[in-house]
Length: 449
Image (cartoon, rainbow, N blue to C red; front, side, top):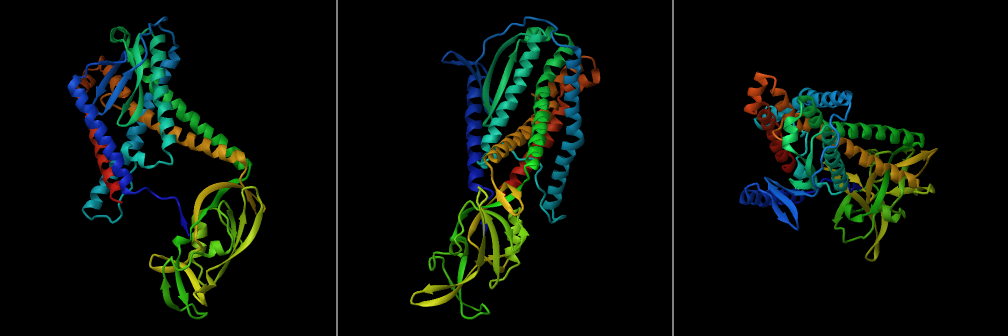
């Protein structure tokens, strides 16, 4: 027995890092060659930056109304950004620092358990091909909403928008809005703060909406009696080893290769892919570990009774044995099917499993068509929350080019102490060093697994 849920190999991660490095080198060289100036391709402005490229698509939009939003919205946006800063420094930063501390202790042998990274570096996300579409869509929605909100609030506050566009930074899509520097410079501090905080407000709203959506879909699935389920994805006899036994005490006399017998308990019992495993010897099965533990605690002479249901709800009981009388050349032989787990011989069925969900009702399980829609929606909502919450928090703190950094610039206009800190980018540099160190260590930990 095995599951087809597995982490990709190092070659996938290596390819992702190679692609990132090539992209960064090429765009950085072009940025140096063009000295940061715009070039025109098919009439569109293009700017190369370190690790990215920006394409200006929109034309200039003049502000039609000055002071167009209520002060309550302005204070809300500023408060939301402030909350993002608080969340980072009270929750995210301690977690990151603790990870770095534990890695140092692990490196010098003070602790034996390797710490788990609290973050996954952006390039390594490319290894998770199954969820890449969810990540890409969530990032696209997040960055677009962020910049669109900047533009809307800027225009309503009397600040002209010179252009807008899309780009690629570190192999991920971004959106941006280019504000008119002159009208922005003339704007009062509260207006500047409102415009700067508008983007994180959009990400916070999307993250909150995603959470509410997850709660709503979870409630609906609970009402349908949806529970975790184990589905047989495929019959794979190749995962079972085989051995010939001489007596009823299962005494090993000859280990055989998989080419000897092209069969296994699942195939001999007539199990079909797509079957939902509901019960094993009367015990409910909801996770792959549930089934794995029962099999590992069984011996080769035992028999398991599996209750299997199709996705439409047609169920049957199947008896699974691990030793069969099979024709070997011109004689019958007692063949056992097993795997070696942690040095121990355990029975083997010969199936690949996937963790899924199904509706359970009095020992019957089935998968209604709307369940696939609900599960897909939950995947999108989950990644929409994770991506937008991350964008919200990271854009709230000072990191040279983030909204949080520019907010501090505005606030420093009325504070000499803050002005000195902003001048030398002290807060920004501290954040970059800590986050950058965590990213480097996390990359090393993930690649060295």
